[in-house]
Length: 314
Image 1 (cartoon, one colour):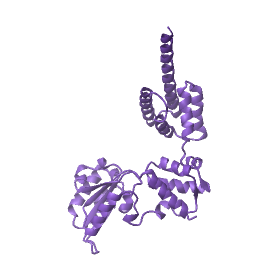
Image 2 (cartoon, rainbow, N blue to C red):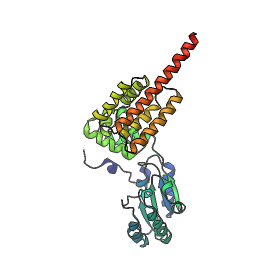
Image 3 (cartoon, helix red, strand yellow):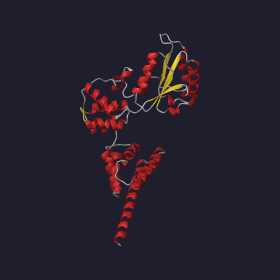
Image 4 (tube, rainbow, N blue to C red):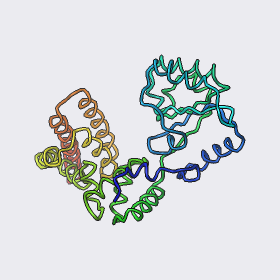
């Protein structure tokens, strides 16, 4: 097995190799065919092909870089048959406001010699003057079947045995991010010859959904102490962070067989807990309070049902 990163080894080498972005690929091919292009803004979630469709760029995003490095590159004329050069700025939405303003002026002054491709996760973080000068290409998360197909191909080439459950778990954890999915696959392959659900959860440091589901079910039944024991098991035995557990609880809430009113109340409580954790609250205390809220909700509903039954008996 090679030591190279699989994300680089299997990175698409041409536009035709980019997965599930047919409309964008078609538009880019048309630009290449015509030998001309506007400034472009590639927007969308991580791991969907934005950087691959352009080129890699520097990690420096301050105003000095725009005023020196970028400006010097942009002002030099192209030495090839194409009359302009292409400069790709990755994660452009992390650039400071001053840097974006300086970039705007550079884009205006050197349009004849350089065209810019800005890659970002959130187009709303790019200042309006730059957005109005760019053609927008919006990349979408990859569907599950495309990610599974890609992972199957890599696993076969690397002689890695996979299970259907293992690959589906990778896809679920990656959430449409192909780069993340490939990284998880490579990490899991180094731990075990066969990639299973359990292997994937160990690699990514997440609890099995069944463990989180069981913890919530105990709380729903009013067994707060048992639910708290399950919580401590996740925090201590698995070493999960409070934020990770909150995110998993949020996912599991939509799979619970509970009244919609209870679900809404729980979602609101999860939001409050997440906010307190971000503000520095103690993980075990805040998560215990969340489970207590769920157990209290369960007690209220049981009480209402008992009163209703008593009234009917009368």
